[in-house]
Every structure is written in C-alpha cells, then in structure tokens.
Image (cartoon, rainbow, N blue to C red):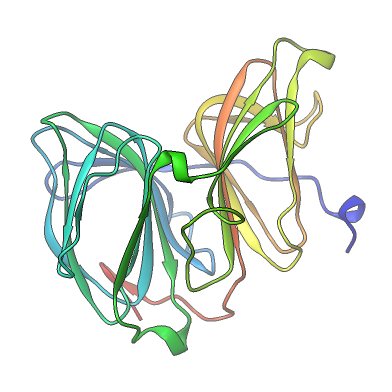
Length: 259
C-alpha cells in the first residue's frame, strides 16, 4: 500500500486512571478493562511518583522496559549493579530477559513524572541475559521541522535500541492560529508496523483538517499496519509516537512477568 492509499481515519481512545500499590498514580493507555495489549507492546502509561512514594525492589522477566522522564528525576537501582538517576529528557532501557530486579524512587525529595513502555520479547529471546542502557537528553537526536520538534528516543541516531525493530518519538507540534497558521506533522511508520500516538500535553486534531477528530492530553490513537497519521494544532500539542514490528505472538502477562 502506498502512502497516499493509507487510511486516514482514527478512533480516539481515553487512557485510564490507575493507582499502583503505594499510591503512585498513572494514566494508562493499555492494558485496561477496555484496551488490550498491542502486539508487540505490553503496557504504556504516564506515571506520577510523589516525593514520599516509590517502587521498592521488585522482579521482571520476559520483556523490555523503556522509561522516558518528563519531570523531575527518578533514582534507579537494579540487580545488575547499575544505579542511575534519569531526569527530564533522559531515557533508560532495561532488558529483563530471564530475570532482573530493580527499584524506582523519586530523586532529590521531589515528585517526578515520566512515561513507561513495556515491549514484549520474541519467544526465542525470553531467556536473554538481562541488560541495562541509558541515554541523556543531549544524546537523543532532535530535529526541527516546519511546525514540529522531533526527538528520537529509539530509532535512527539514538544510542538506545531494543530486541525488536521499533521507533519512539517525542514530538511537539506548534501552530500560531487557525487555517494556514495551524501547525501540522505527519507520521508514517513502516507499513508492516503497528503503533500508537499518545498526547502528553496540549491538544490537536488527527487527520489534518478542520473535520479531524479532536485529540486531548491523556488520549491516544492506535495505528495498524499501513496506517499513517497527521496531527494538527492551532496552539501546541506534545505527543509520543511509538511503532514497531509485531511478533505475531500472543502476549501473556502476569503482573511483572510476560511469558
């Protein structure tokens, strides 16, 4: 299917409010009671950790974790011996493989917020040795386009990669008014990939015209293989756009483990 034949209509979905044990809040796109996993993606949410909260040491296995910080800093420590404190604009990747334990607490006695994505490991890589990698904000390539600023968290030019081909973009689209002054950005992942676009802040319309569907903070749209998306805004809209090559395998999640 060529790009001009790609579907251009997308349904808007609401993320769900989630409270973790210990009181940590999150806005979760999936999985929820209404939205299932999206092969290859197991879970995606925006998390908020208050200064007196945090995730004590806990296990994971069978998938990869990508954390991208939006506000504040998060102190990370794991069973491999890594200790780090990613801050706003920084990212870290954990390949849990056959098993890892880690903890996550807010740094500097201050609240923090970020995005966490769980990516399934293919069945033949579930027993990989666990590993850790990180990237500071100045290591993540940023490109200025006509109406958008695009930072690549995973993808071309980023030092972070995963066991499955994918891309993860932080995109801010800016407009200065309606009509020709509206800003827009078009996303066309590889035709065989699936993905989603989640609004971090602001608002816009998807499909790029006055009749496009309104997309607000905390909402998202999914893309099946061959889909494209045009995001437009009269003011400003920040999104993360995530897509990857599906495994064609069912996702079996039991809490922190994915078989």
